[in-house]
Length: 300
Ligand SMILES: [Zn+2]
Image (cartoon, rainbow, N blue to C red; front, side, top):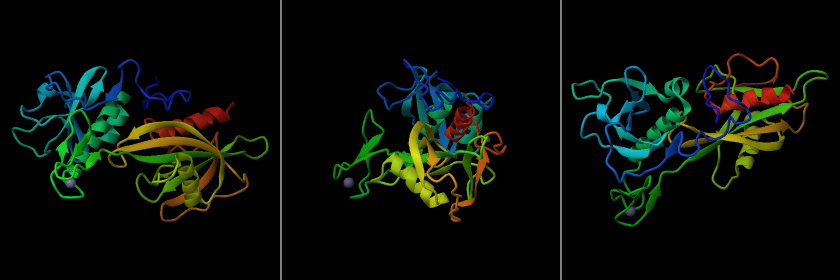
């Protein structure tokens, strides 16, 4: 597995593949049958931030206050990992260290730890926002061994759900003798300075491929052919429980120009693959892996 880092671009051949083999990397789980051990990995969460040691390295359970309400989230290289919701306010009994955004963690720490931190954020947020039964208002109870809850009143089963989103790298042939061109867009909100890919959430009742065609049509008014799956990445920036899936596609009409949906985008433009803008998505994102892979493929 390639570990994407700010220094080294991901190997496009494996960029979308999961980090794990034979128990290495981060494996999500919910096994809370054994109590947390002092050397287990600790991922305290407050709001949208995760606590690390002051030196930026992952914290251990033994470094946090006794009595912390730990929730199992899986294993990292075989070591159990635990999350907990804690208050960020200063105080003598508060944990010391650095509260970090997932963006900061993903940019600086190895990919498996960033994935674990993303799951910690997702699980803690889900537990805070799914406390009561939506059908009968009773307080939900944890289902042991699962990231899910059940209603003691009406038996409603409440699993933690994922939102799937699609990102698409759309290319078209360049002018005669020139390299292919890639469509990049700038969004009206979020990191507005970046040139990014067309993206959006999948609707219920829709395949991933249909979501690609719909989002491309809605956001830039283009039809696409040869929609092909590239890879996926758990993503903790757009809210809890998001799975990004990446696709490549070609413009159905190579002469068509994008027409932007001004609610979501401010600009859309074709760029030759040898002259992409500098303001691209970060090296730890599947958006960037897709763009880099497209450049590599177009350069053959
Ligand atoms: Zn109920």
